[in-house]
Image (cartoon, rainbow, N blue to C red):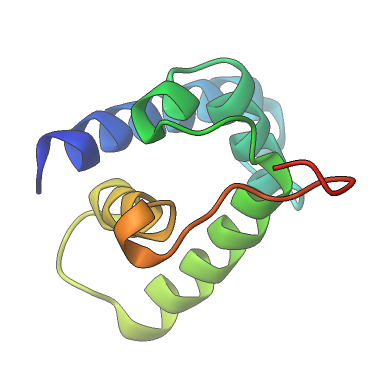
Length: 107
C-alpha cells in the first residue's frame, strides 16, 4: 500500500469509527451508509486534498456501493478499509484516466 492509499485508509477507518458511534443506537444498521461515508470523506476529511480533486460526493457514493459489492463477492485478503483505499486512489488517479467532471460546459 502506497502513502496515498495509506492516508485514505486512515480516513476511511476514522469515518468507520465515527459511523459506528453515531449508529450505535441502531446496532450499526444504516441503509444509507455509502451516502454517509461519502459526505464524511468529502466534506469532513482531507480526502479531496489527498486525491487532488474537488468534491466528488455522488461519484464516491456510487464507488463505495460498487466496492462493497465486490468486496463481499470476492472476499479479498486485505482489511476492507485498506482494500477500498487502494481502489479509491486508483479510480480517481489521472493515470487511470480520471478527469474532473464537466458541469455546464466548464471543466
